[in-house]
Length: 455
Image 1 (cartoon, rainbow, N blue to C red):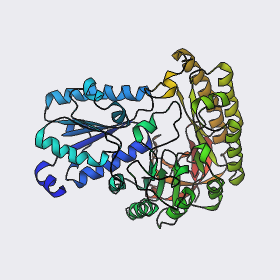
Image 2: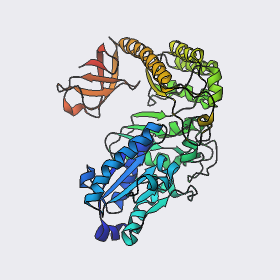
Image 3: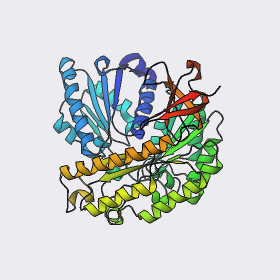
């Protein structure tokens, strides 16, 4: 198939990604699959014969961005009717044929478990020029493992998907519907992918999953083979042994499944970086129960205390939702008080957004946008205080910084990240890129720190 495509059907393609790190990784892997099939990736939609949008649907704003972008691509389609436009990912999985109703010029709609069939869909379109919707969630166990076999290095950092799907069913979340049931990839295949990426020059790996803490605990019905006998801490240990991998991170952790074994690993495994993303979502136990999060703030705070006992100075980040249905001012104050007790290094905060098909969308007590916006502004102002405080506490310390490239701040500076995933800008030679160097922190701001290279 790949040889035939390269000779007769080779096309230029452009992928536009919306949403999370997992989507970005899927887009990169999809690009590898299409390249292997003989197609050629280009840097802009205007150059492409094929435009693919890999979408997110966690919030309503994400859907709006996709349809807005499709409106712009419609003008390209009018100029070149032979162009193929495809919409895939989470929004496509949820919307299905409704995508064609709202954007009739779209040719392909593919779901989260049919990414591996995109090249085949394009081939069939070339043969018959008919619109296709392929969103089945009953793919054979090998399907997505084969898809991730096309992952490739695009620099010195890479992501590896270790599992797919989610079975937590938080009241506000559409992910279980659009990503399917939980399933883990075999540990041997994950380690082999890490080895392949390391051979391509990757020195930092991030393990991805909707809930990495439950890796290997359940069988698979989501198109991934089950991993038996290996839990997530053991998987981390195995990947850490891969020669060439210098740094290891993971995301995302669900608090209800965070184990003492994984917490201890932060102190035991030198390659595991000292930062954890642990979403709280709300500080009110009443709201947490309505959200179906299955833990209390007291339990969550106990995890934070264990993490900081294991590694003093570990960086904590979180997600927070304001304006969940029924949230009172007292509930919101509980969230602010939780933030004061934890003091996060980073925070991703959002207004509650109803998603069709979720229990929360049907709950009473939906709050007006004005209330949500006011609460979000207050929460974000508090977080700025905590971020600046924690960053300034680093002044005078010497940190191990992995250099990513040139700084966006200009001036010829370099930019890198500490083990806690904090950005440091400093002056140094270009040949330090991909290297880990010692940098003294001399100043700190909300989004970054400034340092001096230690000779």
